[in-house]
Length: 414
Image (cartoon, rainbow, N blue to C red):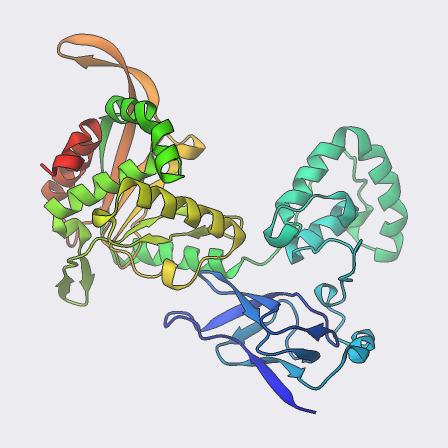
């Protein structure tokens, strides 16, 4: 017998612990080299841990939901094992994710929070379509299924749940599922990503003097430019021309002219960054993540659009790397995609400023003494007043507004 250990991979310097989300292989099963064994969630990203070699997974030391540290041994693989060892799964850790069948026609894989939601609503996993990574069922998938089935299935659900309430002896279970206005509660732990986000945002407000300045921006020029060239842009570069590349380029334009917005405080020192790395906030089921577009001022519109699209897709799938989520000298958050008209974004430490972009709506404005209808959006720049004065914040935001209202500035760099 030759045993190889499976360890938690190295985490970033600011991450000390992680959570085991889901074992992909049950104890006792045969595994191939580089086959994904388990998903691990840190406060920044979800990591996939591959098998270091082929063999039989003879031992799973840490179950789903366990807290682990970097380099901790979580499993063992027997490189001389054979598939005949597979029946060991009957004596393995009874964690649900470790005993799911892997053959054709097997039950779909279910995230832990989704499993609880399935049990609460009395729904079978095979009736729910999974939209999570690898087709896994998420809590949102379950809630959507509940909403879709409620008008026609409420009576059956109530009768199906009623016998189960007795052995459970739960006051919550005893309440009929179809009762109107039922006052129920559910409790679940925060994901590490959301918990860390909450910690950092609170820390940001408590350790910096934050202020927000606003301006309005006429998006007519950007919308006309995008409408005129979006088809040829996509044919040429294979990526759609959206609005985020304009916001990123406009921010980079302003940061070059007002470098204090791109600086940060470290102790009693001001750290000036000669590069512009812009984080783009992306909302996911697990929480907010901010992947970073490196050297944003040097990249083309096509490169930025392709990178942001890739970030958004992999953020939803939990495939972003720690390196892609680390660093950043400035951040952009776009609440406008959800319909937000105005907000005061919170600075992402150790950065000193953040741009909030909002919904674009047609409004009546005065241009050259005439009332006209223009597509307008509000821009919000939150900044750390310990470092950035109001004059610098306002003129920096005006520079972003000018670049968006006259995109030729971005090409001519004037």
